Image (cartoon, rainbow, N blue to C red; front, side, top):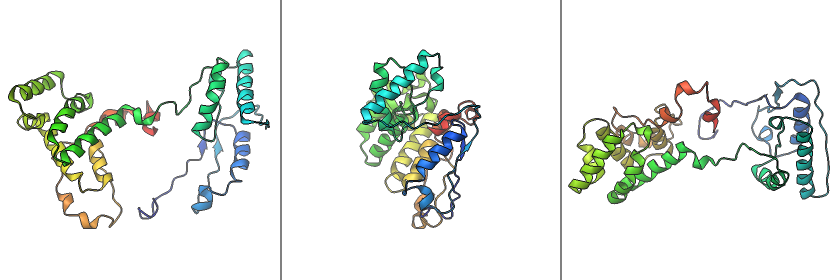
Length: 273
């Protein structure tokens, strides 16, 4: 990243709102024993966390067991005991070094009838924004390869998504006309003034550009990020192709649909997924 961009500003997130200071200090003493850490690789990085959660009583303990199985069983037993004592389940967290460790402990928690919700429970590849971008990517690749019949088979599913702002009746009319005239959807869209025509032109041009433009440029156009930045001089030899682009009147609505500026304050976690 530092080689690709010239003098990038590196921002280290050090504010912690989950753990108290004794926990962070204990964790820090363990973490700093590792050699392959960013602090040892990148100059001037300090990942010392600042605790913003204040508790009157915090106890940090170390328990050593003979096997990993014993550890999982012991953790499940301790959580069950806390719940039986009236502890709020929302105040209990199990933090692992990586996701696979959390997956391994799930059977033990399940056997103890302990309800679980973990942060990486949802696969990011199955989220609506990613699925729609994947559909769009497939269409653009097919367009670039001139596989028009395959494109025709994928457009109904792609365009039916509400992000494109195409009404149900307009979709029906488009489908019916293409069927009656035995023509491709893109052909009919190009003859339909308004949003359908603009979208068709945008897809066609972007499909062509996807064959030779950098991925980050195409991806920005796909999601509607018109503020993309390219490292100085990195793509100087491609200045000419950049003069051709999707119609100026059409900008992808995906970013505005999934991540509207008004939603940042209310659903900030969605913007970090």
